[in-house]
Length: 112
Image (tube, rainbow, N blue to C red; front, side):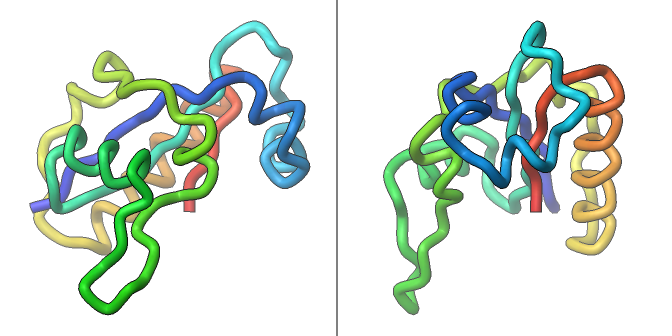
């Protein structure tokens, strides 16, 4: 099973990260900067992996550089309504749908 999660990012990400800024031309600086992801772990475990720069057994970095540097905390109110998802493909689709929905609401959002 997979979970979708949302992490609030420091607004510094918008001023300091060109790719993030270019991905969010709709952002007006009023609402928050967010990261949307999906995981087979709990959102809390996944957040901790991002913040700690965790590596996989094969030595691959499991953390998003954006979350590691700018991640503040989980925003449960933006994802707790989403039920666990059975397949990775469905979870990736839901991650993108949520990210685009939040962008329409003027949040600045990063997902991959």
